[in-house]
Length: 304
View 1 (cartoon, rainbow, N blue to C red):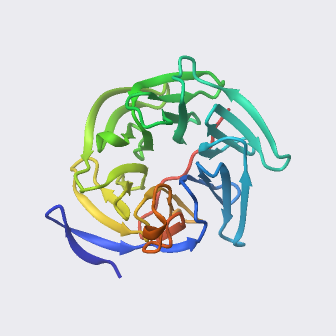
View 2 (view 1 turned 90 degrees about the horizontal axis):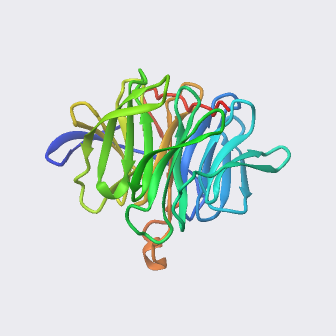
């Protein structure tokens, strides 16, 4: 049963995620739910591995590719679309075929793609970051269904979580070092952003916001890298509603899946953790799950 705990001076609920798969990912990231195939997709960025998990059968696959993979989303026409180190690719797992789709014009050198997600219209949003930790080298891009690529936000240090409100009128975005979740007015018909403002200031010591998702009630669930968990906030009031404890300090991202969209799948990482410290958190890099009483929003497929 969830317990109560004061976090940042506020009374909040604390729940516990369970370890689902001991994957020991170097940098687990980017989970997405393929509703059509009942399949969870996620990546190990540094391991260059595309993972899948089928809850109904317990079947697990791991495919090592040629580049770092920042994010993977299902494609409406079949297969997946990947944001890789050198650009956007389509991947057909049945034929083990990787097809280059494009790379943003003007993209800075020595960067790689990081997190990404599709909006309800089928556009694929994904951003970049420096390979060497340099600030403001990245950007947020949008891969349109006609395969053109737009640069939307520049001078980003570590492009990360994306989410949309249930009515698709608000987009949430994280540039991790800012320790903020930004909100933008969103036009689903055009994919245009406006009126950027801070929705959440993350003031938890030692933690930065990473990946995120939104639920059917309009609340956002944010993975805190360095925070041992997922935090559920009201993005309108700023109220912290829930912490889901995860047995890995570097919780990296989350998405809802399962038949009822009530299973919150959580990725984590072990990159940068000394061997001695890994003995204290043996589940670092695992795939975890929290059985929520709140229904999530679906993962949208790329429509191109």
